[in-house]
Length: 223
Image (cartoon, rainbow, N blue to C red):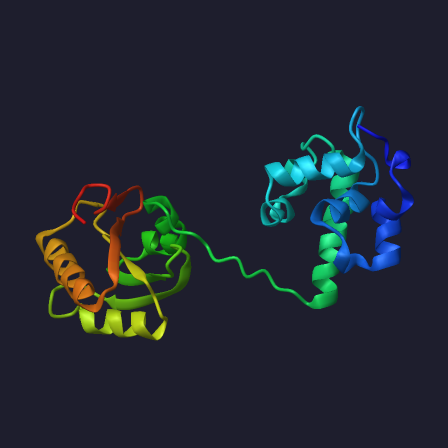
């Protein structure tokens, strides 16, 4: 593998940026400039290319220092350079983090509704998801002892249409500490699932939360 000094000047990342502008550089050339140097047996462009083959740009730039510094060819000093460049760009453009939390398990649901553990009355909330199972909205819907006359599928799916939601997850707490679903819980869930099928909006799960446990309808094959 040729050293960077053996590559024609016009093809070296820094010289190419100066001559043609940063917008005309390949991804690995931009990363190579941040890295500065390669490692034994591989020039900086090859190192950058191999890093990007293993990690997508999005994944790489979302890494924290401790993980970034472990990557062969980056290390502690270069990790600081990459993170500093990214942070400066964010501040200059006033970019806000817009990553939506992905809901893939009952534990992910709990993370979004953990406050229900301490409630002394039953609270029923709905998590609204996009097609990638990312949470786009969550809303407390009902408070009090749940019954079929209180929980209206219409209100749940009106909000789903408003949020352009692809699916929903139902969540409620049991202040008693018993996380097993009651007959009323089963009836309410069936009504909402059936209404969702009519609307073309999936009910992915119904999670019951207590202070020490959680119960997933999906994990127990009830949805």
